[in-house]
Image (cartoon, rainbow, N blue to C red):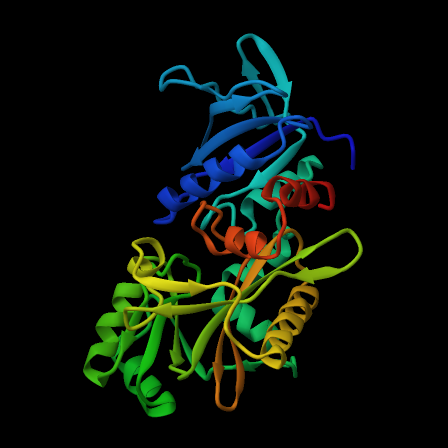
Length: 338
């Protein structure tokens, strides 16, 4: 590109993932190359977009106190910094959850012609909803999908639970279709507990997917474009101390994240190749992480994360380090190849 000057790193969200999003955004902002770009950190939550800090080329980061944080002008996507109008000309999206991961923010940016780091509004919308994404991949012949059932808020939950158990058996995973960071997720081993688990998932969204539990090892792999083609980063195996990779395991140290995964070359190659195929099949952009279960009968797709975590302890930075890449240079590649 070469024309990008002022990068807005958007973080915060309208969902339960707000805190995690802030940590990801602050880490990302700290790693973007300030010899090439001016970096503006925008905290965006419930319709209020405020500048919380900025770091101009070759300068120190300036944090703005509450009460003195200018708002982003949505008419022309600018912000007033100490009397100077700054036109923001690129967005690095680090909003986990709504509206930065479900396509709403991307749609706004597309209408203004502002380039950004993540998937398009359409792809973001499809990928963010677990049931929609699985439906999109059902005809793909290169990855397996666990059997599932779908329910929307307002449906008869008890009747649905009975049908789901009869169709899928036990154990089951219950997930809000449009959530992340394991909020609202339950593993159900008894039929009597399913209705409550569905209602718990409804606290995070209006629709829920129930999936048959697939035994096996959990893996994740991130993919990005280098300007020519999609490239896979090293595979990570996730070994949770809990029943599954829940919020506690993800963020409170109750899991092992083995990078690179201790697997044979054939499985590694299959996961990386499948990840690139899913990335291309969906039409992804930027850095995307894809999660799997490797079972005795094959590789099962779990979900796509179009705005994966980017704290210092997150999976993608671990993959980047394992690949022997510098994070700042890696982010420059994402920005310039958007």
